[in-house]
Length: 217
Length: 267
Image (cartoon, rainbow over all chains, first blue to last red; front, side, top):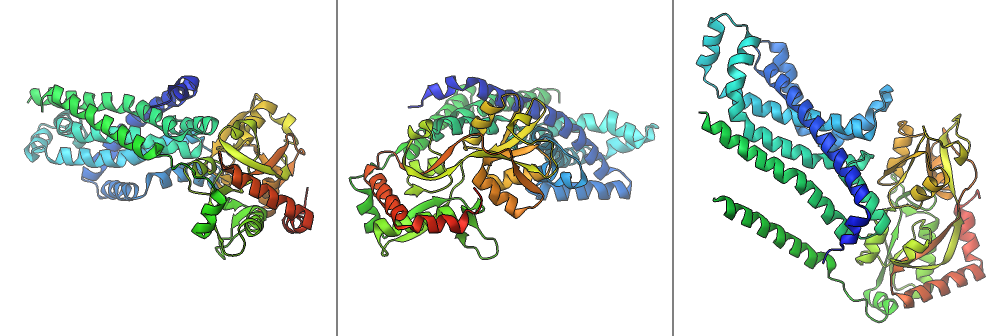
């Protein structure tokens, strides 16, 4: 049976990590969503240079391990005299990484909107950007919610890499509690439960949104 | 799938997973009567040493060999207890992993710059002291920090997960912020990238780091006592006795001093 005293004795430490993981996830969610949409628009814009930037971004960032990106922002940038804390570097790396996947999901969503919509929008005098903003993206969003929701779940789980460079998240504090108690199994099971407290409601929310959006069709 | 069925499935999967892990994680192979005989029968003794601590347990990236004071002590003790027929297999441990690896039997003993403390004695057994170190600070040359007294509210100190260093520096300088890393190489990398003002751990380990990078120096003398012991699984009293006997023989014969002078030039 689990030793719950590990949880109760160290609850303040678990909470510090939990609250930080929530902060990291929220900031990451917002930042990666914004950046992901921008990159998606780059990839679809009728400007070759933007296409190139978007494609390079997605292909490079998606195919490098997240932890490597994390180390780049944490240790690598110090060669250019930029010094981020573990929390900052990790959140930036997490946002940039997730944005690449969100960009792809948004791009697929947009491309699945009927081409006629864009033509019609442009022909009423809207610029490309306006057409995207007011006509295409709102329709694409419905298609795109499930894969984006999935990426957000991944983001919350991926935030655990911050534990490796002093990011002060749940995993970091798990290690701190582990070295206090030297009880391996129970300590990390409780951490798992904390992550579930974040991921299960999030996945239920995504399911809820999915069903509500389907209703408006 | 109906909502209730979905919840039931989720709950069942979780319970099964937890039970499965409980089964695997907690199955304790009861350490039978004589660990010394067991090791002799097996033909090899597995010793956990550091791979990243210059002078104590260090894997040379060019040769791939693991060398250091701890390594030589481990080999000398094994020879005394088990004779030449038993091979010494080295396994990497870090301050974070050395106790779990002992607990689940991945290693028979740990010779890895490990300080004997009352808290650790609750979970592992220690041999007699085989080396006296003390905690100190590593800083960049020219740093304003000259001793532990200079660690104040605005400073950051780096150390390693699982080492006594974190708690000790918090006691000696309660206002400073402490950041912990997976092992000493990562902590040193963090120091070099400016993530902290000082790195703290045993002076012995710090001397090894300073030897690797002349831009860094050890300052402030020692502010704790760190008596190193060889750790073994709790309850292995026969092995502990054998190790202590071997240690005494090494000290009496002068072999201990030979090994020490080979590696530890500063004190």
